[in-house]
Amino acid sequence: MNREQLVQDIDQGLRIQEMADKYGKAPQTIRQWLWKNGLKAGRANDSLRAQALDDIQKSMVLGMLMGDSYINKHGALLDEHSVLQEELVLWRAKLLDPFVSKIRRVDKKFGKIVRLETIAHPHFKDLRSMVYQEGVKRVPSEVISQLDLFALANWYADDGTLFQRKLVRFLLAGNTPEEDVMRFCIYLNSSWEMKCKAWKNNRQNVWAVTSRYAPSKRLLQKFRRLDLPQCLNSKLGLNP
Image 1 (spheres, one colour):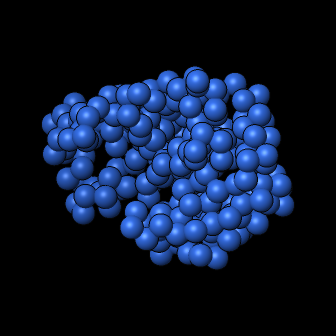
Image 2 (cartoon, rainbow, N blue to C red):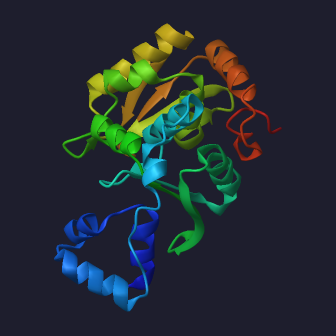
């Protein structure tokens, strides 16, 4: 077994039994792997797993999960972006302290990325159960009820764009059920007076939820007051 992978499992707070389940091995085999690599799976993160997230952290994680982030089955949050958005990853890591276990650069075929990884946490695991249903990422009413401005801004940071340099647009995966897309539209229209319309681009396999000009301008002004990272300036209409 690769030592780096074992270190990553330990950093994410996996116990021996959880590692055994992950690799389909007996707990004794996991103990042998750890011993050979000079590692030890302990309870170092138990106190952090028992610590509740504050309201800002909860909002940000919800927005991240609805965007590009992912929570694995053990309850660890993973967030990846190109190095061009490293500022965004570092900003999120600062706000998620002390739950971040690792930030690193990774080489991929399409270029370098920056990856943020957290410890496994019950709150993250609960979010995963709420959002991922039968392998499909959903936008259930439970998510809508928890969406505030900060969560929405983090969602927009990942999956939003400024269409034609003036219209706020959210992109959702093409396999998102239509009822979920409509639920999100209703939320934007009722909570933020966005006057959104949704359509599906079958060629790119995405849903596009686009607002009109005046409501887009109002929402962008609210986003700008949140002091978001400068790498998002183009999405916020701040670049010439």
